[in-house]
Image (cartoon, rainbow, N blue to C red; front, side):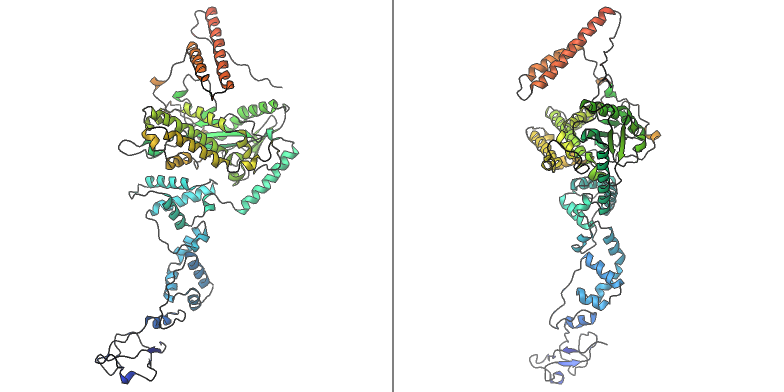
Amino acid sequence: MFPDIPVPPLACRTAPDIPCSPCTPADSFQYLPAQPLMEYNINHPCSLHTPVQFPHSFFSMTDGSPGIPPDAKRKRVSLSIKDKVTLLQDLENGASVKSLCDKYGIGTSTIYDLKKQKDKLLTFYSNSDAPDLMADRKTLHQAKNVSVDKVLMEWIRQRRKENFPLSRSLIMAQAKKFHVLLNISTPCEYSSGWYGKFKKRNGLGILSINGEKTSEEYNVADTFVKKLNKLVSDEHLSAEQVYNAAKTSLFWRHLPQKLVATAQGSAPSGLDEPKERLTVLACSNAAGTHKTRLLIVGRSRNPRAFKGVRVFPVTYTANKQAGISREIFQDWFENHFVPEARAHCMSVGLSCDAKIMLILDHCPTNPKPEFLVKDNVFAVCLPPDCTSFIQPLDQGILRLFKSHYKSEFLQRMLTACSKGKKAAQFQANVNIKDAIWTAALAWDKVDKQALIHGWRNLCPSTFVWDNPGEECDFLGFTELRESQLVSELMNYARSLSCPEAQLMDEEVMEESFNIDTDSPVALQLVDGEMNESSDEESDGDEPAAATKEKMSIDRMISLAEELIGGMEQRSFISEQQIMSVYRIKEQLLQEKLYETAWTQMFPNSTSCPDPQPSGDENC
């Protein structure tokens, strides 16, 4: 039954200004039993009367909504996702429909609609990385490219589980990759505007994008830091004796697609991984005074570019996936790290049997610590899920190393393009020998202060450095130095007139500097498979005919003299740098005398053996 409601007086069509007496009470309102809405009042004795107009607000009262004045309409209420979920939870806990209608200012039909959407709402809310953001979102509208959103969110969740820090530019670049891989024909810019909507659609907050850590992970890390500091104190280890080694991926000749597009406007679809990827293992001590030679793992054991090369600035090896296996790591530890670290400790006055500690991340492809023991050198592993915020080299050091590499690489590309080459031609001519020398140069540019900065979270109280305040001075040093490199590169590009230089913008820089940020370095393969390497001489090197012949000593001496003459005319070159070239020239002259003497002694010999440098003496 409907409640009795007041009905306005009816006017006669023949005399609209005069109320009809049969239906007009003294108070100008007739109270009739409520009845369903109809166009005419069939009970009225006059068939010429106008239709009865029932205000909508009267009938809205029957919908369970709060009392609303007869002369006003109920205001439309739009609930947020968070409110909808809370309402459904209250309903599940026994709250009445009427009380919820009163609380939220909605009708019963709205609640019934929400009950139909219950599963979708709860699933969406629970999958959100930042539920608090659901207080601002009101719909479940999906993106135009639903498939990209779906795989991208799964990719983000996987990266977060692996503790890879994420950034806006990295997520935008990954979305572009998925757009291509999924063969989506609908165009999409994946701009900053898209990124903002993507975050809002999926409930992503700033902390979740940057790798939010739980309080439990921080507690585990804090406990480990205390134990490590106690171990360092008990063993009387100095900053010279404590090392950290960490791996990273390096796409050694990647150029942004914008720069290598063909004349028809198309660009390569992506990187050929692992062919275009190297795995780099870097290692340094807490004092910032010693960086070991880089260990670089490629795909080909005998690249064509290595023919005739006798000197390398890094330790190079290879396997099928260009990854570091247990066997490779064990060999590096025993035959490279231990001798280099021991030689450094002795050079700073420590005894020949002083203890040395190597700190490693918790990686399944690393040997267990009990196997990494030799000559009083031992290893300690960080706890799982704590690498990204306490491992020293992950505090911006490896990022800085790769920034130096990419800055140098792009600068060489611009120089080549200014001389008439295309970016794609330059990229094709770069070989792995160029890459390892550029990597060694980039590692050399990472200075002592930067290395010390990386230890601020792991050993804040144990070590005392020369300048205790330098940690504060280097807050945000990675971002600052990277921005300086980008600024220098942009200034150089503006000074050139080639098309590639005109294309250098923020988008190109972001893609170049972030392309390998999330690339995996721990490959889940057994040692036998990982240690298989390709003996083919490809790796994208130049044809065999382009391999340079061995340069004569006389030619090298002539070039050294010419270089010295040019260096002496430049004020930015120091005396020490010029002197180093003089020493090289002197060494070449000594080699020339050695070759001459050998030829006189053995006139029928076709080659002269290279003299071997004397090794370091051990105690």
